[in-house]
Image (cartoon, rainbow over all chains, first blue to last red; front, top):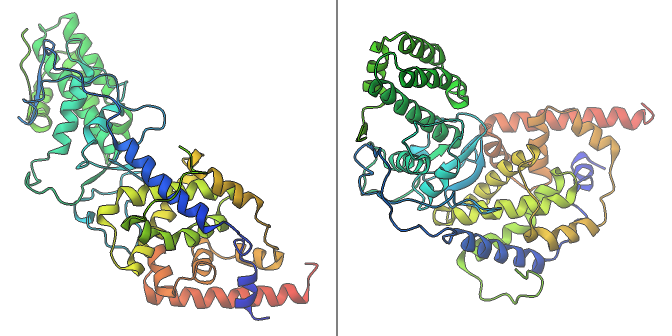
Length: 258
Length: 172
């Protein structure tokens, strides 16, 4: 027996016997199930007044004066934004239409389509609870605002509604961490120098240097930089902080009534 | 959802495109997933991804096949990471996989395959078991066509040598 025949005879699936009918039913059921899951699972609540601080990100979220109920994810609910792909985004050797705007692979986290209709709903569900916010900032509103900003990057033509743009969840969480850090920098600047409030803000900034996505995406020196920034703020020096606000938080302005 | 009894209505374009891939995809997972019945869950997960991307699936059957197996490869990796959950959608297929007669294992072939580098082994399996051409299988693994041909020839030669040796000395 030649080697090819021997290999073929060793095929573990050679005796697999599953009916075409069962597979057809599975195919039908999967598409039906996903279509059902794609339907809204949590109806938006009526608009409610914002809290003291309204975070305007990139001018894109001014119209988003609405609150959303609890995170939309429920047991087993999947979002269209979720690609189901982890790590390597594209099957190798296959040219995908959304490849050009796919970000660089970061890690093994899931790729998410930021142009999917339910991206913002999904993104809110992965806001990292450790990325705490100043007391007057509503986390859900903030998460929606940042997600909306992510979904409408300035480099993308708003009229371009074709294709997809993929990001990994680590990148999204990293953006949440960065944006949360911005709120604490603004909090520090708003606090009276040397006050408990300023110290509290600087303390969170110091902790934020070690938030997971910040650490995992640090290509070199980022963690050290934020530690230095926080230490300077703790000692009352806001020069690094001012510089970072300009570089990393140019679109984030607080209209807090404080 | 009653998967068992619901009549199958008119086939949609998506289903018509994917239906010919169902048996090959299930077999792909059955060859690589342990326990084997979990191949049903991997298949349903693959279908979910394909359904989500239905607007951008390749039109050509060959490209669609390559695309679908690329997705399957990712799903398989997720299975290894424990990220594939058992769902009701796979119940019926899982049962049929479970009761399928197990293949007779040629231990010498299994050992010989196991001695190959992972990528070479996968290349051989994609070609011999999954029916891909050498270049197609190489593309799925991120290997250029020329390199895939070289690696495949070397892998086959190595299998030949190992099997010849084991046939001469079956007790080793």
